[in-house]
Each structure stands twice: as structure tokens, then as C-alpha cells.
Image (cartoon, rainbow, N blue to C red; front, side, top):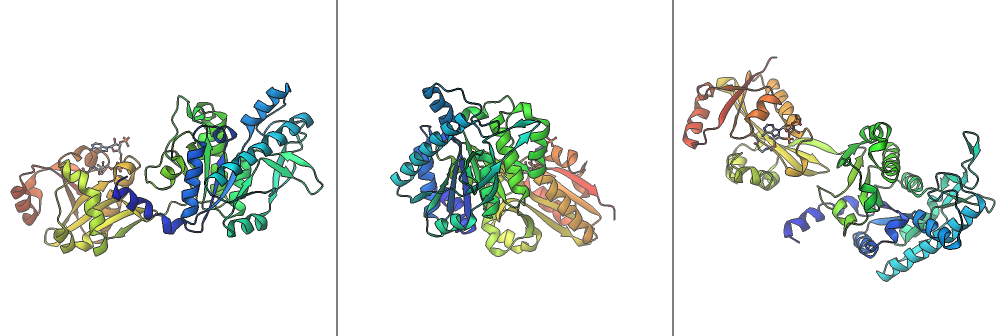
Length: 427
Ligand SMILES: CC(C)(COP(=O)(O)OP(=O)(O)OC[C@H]1O[C@@H](n2cnc3c(N)ncnc32)[C@H](O)[C@@H]1OP(=O)(O)O)[C@@H](O)C(=O)NCCC(=O)NCCS
């Protein structure tokens, strides 16, 4: 691990301390070789004072147990009909798995408790068919869950719900995780699905706004496996009801949880409700961030090298685009009042955030800023992004002689031979 990785990780720690994460694990992931690694990830989360609730599925175990018993079950994922024999197998398989998970957690020194926190009612009759012992979550015992969380204990929630009269229902774990996260006002849900669930011709986007996730579930159901669609649907639902982020991850990847939570790139798909995004002026303390953000572009000769002193001299010209308080892009606007023009400069979007419209957002931002300052002509110099500035920013190629005299002098001295581009700003 590089020191810079540690820096990246540490910036998230204050954001998440004492917040609740609901980790929803498919039964198949809990049975996989990678499960002990995921338990270690949970131990890291706990060591950072993140409160964890573990909701698990049991479909894989239910199918296996039914096979062992030679029983034909009506359904294994808690969405279809659950008849009496299927319910019995489901209870046995789910509780066995809960116990195994608790053993795993204790092997990494984590305290955990099984809890029947799901109050359910029967799903009832759908399209004329009685769903029998399939249940819907009616309420979550928030008080009991919070008691455990406050004591540093991980509540383990199986996919079973209970009514007030001693009856048990099979509930779906994806939707249970949603209800638990909403009721607990969790910061995140992390859905862990087995690797084969991601084996589809279409790839999942890395980030989806709620409406995009809903659209995908509605219009592209056949492009993805039912397991992934269920997780995306519940992710969107959870975000609609106030959970800030929901993630769908391949539970077969080593350190899946940590990689997703503590890096900008992530490894899975994130559905987000309120991406905290802002464009703000930079301060002295941000100069280092700007220099490190543009380092790669400077090395590629896309941007001119700027020293700390140069940036400090025109500090108020620079702007940062932040997501979740992390700088991901920057731009500068240098004004030449005597010439009625301004330069859009130092436009850079970090690799992990390219092609998501941030460059265009910053161009539009700078253009508005220039207009407010009565600038008539915006210009830009580029060695490699001149097509971008023309096609996406509406700039046109121009002659260096159109630059303000002071800028022309610097242009000639630099020897970079950048393409000169201009855009006339109408009031
Ligand atoms: C150029 C840059 C700012 C684009 O930012 P971005 O946020 O990735 O771009 P957007 O999301 O707004 O736009 C993406 C579109 O621009 C296109 N594009 C990106 N870089 C391009 C380039 N150098 N030339 C032509 N088109 C480019 C993409 O193919 C994509 O096209 P599509 O929408 O038709 O699919 C970014 O790649 C960067 O920082 N480059 C290095 C620094 C640089 O050259 N800055 C400009 C000098 S002032």
C-alpha cells in the first residue's frame, strides 16, 4: 500500500465514524472462499467506529438443504410462494447460516448477536395466488438494533420475519436490508452478490443516480441477472427513502468492502441520492491538492506546469470541483480587463471521474463567471484537448494574435505551440 492510499482512506474516516452501514450478504457469498476476507473487512470497519448491521440471505443454503432432504421447494429467495415444507427448510437453513456467520465474526474478535428484529405480515394473495408463508417487512425493531449497535455488537439479521402471534415468514434479504437501513437512518447499504451474478453481456455503470437506477431496472431488466436487478431496485428504493448511498458489489473480490468504501474509483456500482458536489474557490491550503490533481496532465504536456508560488499569486482565479469533499477536478479563469477577455485555464478532470460531464460542467461554470464579470471573449490554449473545447465547449480555432498582448508574450516564450481557441460570450 502506498502512503497516498492511506491518505485517501483517512479522509473518509471522520465522515463515517459512528454512522451505520447495513451489509447485505447473499447466502452464496457467505458460503464462499472469500467470506473470511469479508469478515476481516468488517473488523476494519468496526475498528474505525463504523456501526455494522449484517443482513443475510440464505437462498443457496435453502436449495442445498432441500436437496439433501429430497424435498421439492416452492421458492428459495423469499419472493415467490413459500409453502409449509419450504418454510421449515428455510428456517433450518437460515438459522444454521446465522450461526455460522456468528462463528465467523467471533473468529475475528467481533461481537455479534442474532436478532429477530423483523416484524412481518404475510404477503397475502397476489394475482389470485396465496403466497402462504412469504412475508413482507412491516416494521423493524429499531430500539433493539440500536441497543446492540450502541454496545459495539453487530446485529445479524436472517431473512425471516415474525408476526406478533408466533408465526414465522420467509422474507427476502435484499428488501429486508432496505427496510433496516431506512429505519436506522443508515449512511450506506452494501449489497454483496456472488461473482456469477455479474456475468452478463451488459456491464453495470459505476455510479447511478436514483432515477437512472430506476430507469435501468424498468427498461433493461433482461440485460442483467435477477439478483442484480433486485439489488438495484432495493438500492434505488433505499436512496429514495433517505439512505445516501447503496452499493452493489461482487462479494468474491478480496477486500471488496474496503475497496468500495475507501476509494474514489470503487469496485462496484453505487446508487446515490444526494451526491455532495460543489464547485468552490480554492484557499491556500488547497494549492497542494490542485498541484497533485493536475500532475498527470502536466506530465502528459496537456497542461502547463504551475508552481505553488504562481498559483498563490492568482489564488482567487482557481476553482475546485469536489465530490464528498474530495477534489476531483479544477479550472481557472484569468481575466485580462484591459482586453475585455479572459482565459479558461487549468481545466483538469481526475482520471476516475472522466467522461461524466464534469469537464463540461466546469466549462459552463467558468463561462457564467466570465459573463458576470462582463468578459466579452473567452479564450483557451490547448495542446491535446482542442477538439474537446471545440466540440463540447463551443470554442473555435483562432490566431495567437487574438490573445491579449501580455498573454501573447507568454505564449511565444513558452514554445508549447498550443492551439488557440476563442468563444464570444453574448450577454
Ligand atoms: C479534457 C477533459 C477536461 C475532459 O473532461 P471530462 O470531464 O472527462 O469530459 P466530459 O465528461 O465533459 O466530456 C466527455 C466527452 O468529451 C470527449 N473528450 C474527452 N477528452 C477529449 C479530448 N481530449 N478530445 C476530444 N474529445 C474529448 C469524450 O470522448 C466524451 O465524448 P462523448 O460525450 O461524445 O462521449 C479531461 O479529459 C482532462 O482533464 N484532460 C487533461 C487536461 C486537459 O487537456 N485540459 C484542457 C486544457 S485547458
